[in-house]
Amino acid sequence: MILAIDIGGTKIAAANVINGECQDRRQLPMPATEAAFLQAIQELASDRPQPTGVAIAVTGYVDGCAVRAVNPQTIPFWDAYPLIPRLTQLLGCSVVAINDAQAAAWGEYCLRHQQCQDLLFITLSTGVGGGLVLGGSLREGTHGLAGHVGHAAVDVAPIDAPYACGCGRMGCLEAVASGTALARQAGHHFGHSLSSTELFDMARLGDHDALQLVQRAARAVASAIASSHAQLDLELVVLGGSVGLAPGMLDWVQAALAEFPQVYQLPIERALLGADSGLVGAAAWLEQKVKSE
Ligand code: ADP
Ligand code: BMX
Ligand code: ZN
Image (cartoon, rainbow, N blue to C red; front, side, top):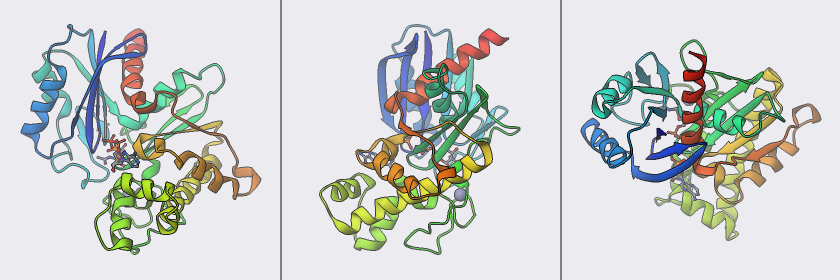
């Protein structure tokens, strides 16, 4: 049994993963301080059978023993945070970590490896993450940064432009299409605070302006998909994260991509593992790592 933990900008999930299935899945909000974070991990990991290993899927890129933020606004104490030594000490067990979207890409790939070798997973969540499987191999990159499609520039500006992404660039997909960006733009447009969930509810109920906002985000996602496809010649894109899984989003992204020239067309599917792609993927990645050692 592998204990898998998925640490995102909004929530931490943990589960015992056995043969690709999550058991005893628990979830807590991601706290803003290190002390509260370690307490949350302790709580999520307690009262479980002794795992053979701990696999962490984490927001940010994993460079050696530390996790680094591309967007330091995601979590206050996260940039160059020594995640692996801290959790090894806390859990008393060997710990490995990988970027959350890379883990999810691997989880979704493992379910499709007979049909597909080149896949891009995109999570639309607190931020926008990405993971690449090319030629059947998960690409982590030299610094753990591979696949960060949320920080690719797109030709759709946020409605409150000019707005710099938390990574410091102008024009990033994450600044238009993440849950954080949708809530920010909704607040700007409607003049009061609105969550991404509320915005989607309004869009589905037929509110014209809410629909325009989420469709604008979907166009930005399609633009990033077309650029990735032009560079990598992909077979499939898989969409996940709470915003990516929100009813309507996949259809809007598919419809936006259908407006592009033929050369940019490729299938986009919903994550088969839903909110568990990162957990199952991190566990599968650890199992593969152990086998190849
Ligand atoms: P994390 O980023 O921690 O992995 P999620 O994938 O749940 O977590 O993404 C969190 C973001 O998704 C938040 O911005 C939240 O407001 C938004 N969100 C959560 N549920 C929904 C929903 N049903 N519809 C639209 N947005 C949602
Ligand atoms: C950000 C970046 C990515 C991550 C993505 C989605 C940080 C801390 N995170 O672009 O590494 O994959 O968000 O992560 O720079 P989530 O927080 O939305 O789950
Ligand atoms: Zn950025």
